[in-house]
Image 1 (cartoon, rainbow, N blue to C red):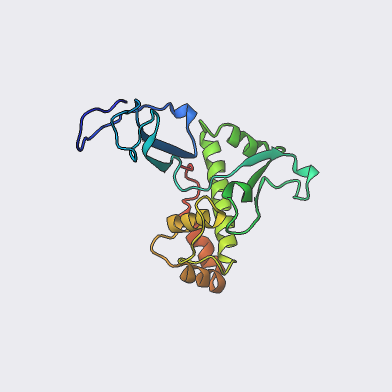
Image 2: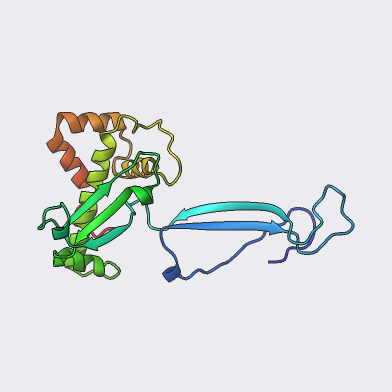
Length: 210
């Protein structure tokens, strides 16, 4: 869009992006550049066409705060996992590690109910929704329990954007709004059964994941 005139100007941008091309984290880069070469400007002012006068990047997560990580469908008989297990969430690396490299959801291809549910995730049947909800609930439980077992996981922790620690903090805030990490960690240690029920309620088990 070409801007003209002087002083303060308000510009409204109306852009349509195809949903099929989007997912995860959407990065919007906005830049104000000089359209034409200026010969009458001061020596210290931008003169060349294409000079960047101002720029800004905005990040928009399109799929909420639910755990998002790579997944793979494999034959558990070829691994160390129990042959009859339906799925397994691998968590590795430190809290400063990138989330996408620290989490991996493995689905057992021999468990056709679970594997089919993920195949139909874009348009799930009622049974698929129940399976996906159970997987989400179990993944959230694994992530929260992993986080609570690390002393460095605390409200005042400062983890890099996109890191495992930042993802776990975001998940904790979503599942336990208004509660402190210290209180939830203590409840897990003193009353594991109550903590399990609290987490089950927080993830809204057997509802279709959002």
